[in-house]
Length: 233
Image 1 (cartoon, rainbow, N blue to C red):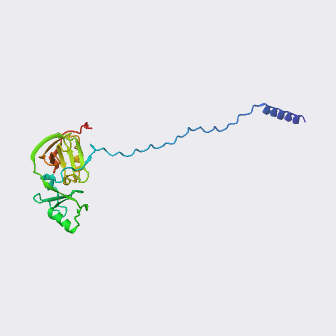
Image 2: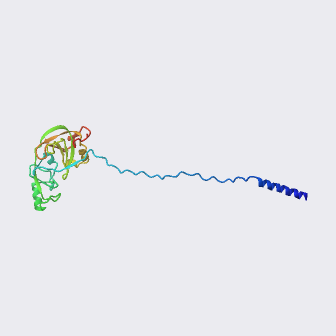
Image 3: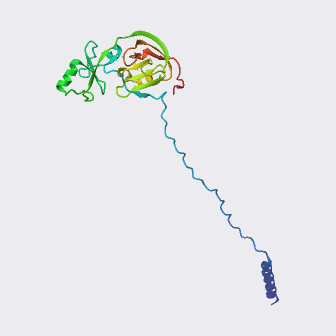
């Protein structure tokens, strides 16, 4: 009996000891670390491609002058009869469409009147004007600044004006379609604006076009200085 009471006493002491012990802290997993907010990446807008600017804007112009336009022999040599395709013969009477400026010999114009109701083969216009060939002019070599480059509204001609004067009074370089339609010719002509150029050719001064040199080959014009600001405006 005493042994039983002794064990009971020991078990009681053990229970009291356990009851008096401080509770153990419960280990809990650490909360996940807070991530910084993610800012969405927005692609920057791609700027639209910008076309390279030309050396200068080309101004349009219209031919003006007397009803019988006079042209240089070099210019006439670059043109052909609109009906037969033959080079124009300055010894014959020549006609030109007032709308598209296609040229015809007298016989070709008569054929158009008889078989095509008098209409131009290129644009069907019915009005023509006669023109003659001016003297070839005297050969010159000059150095000048190109003030501006102009393009004809209706005929494919380009003009580089060499003096800051009225159009008819200023010396100019005329580039006929036979030259300006060649590969790279248009860029070459427009690049001459505001540049110092050396020119050799035949200078013709009579007629409504004023003093001009007709350029039929690129070797006749050579740029010798970079473009300069246009102060004529």
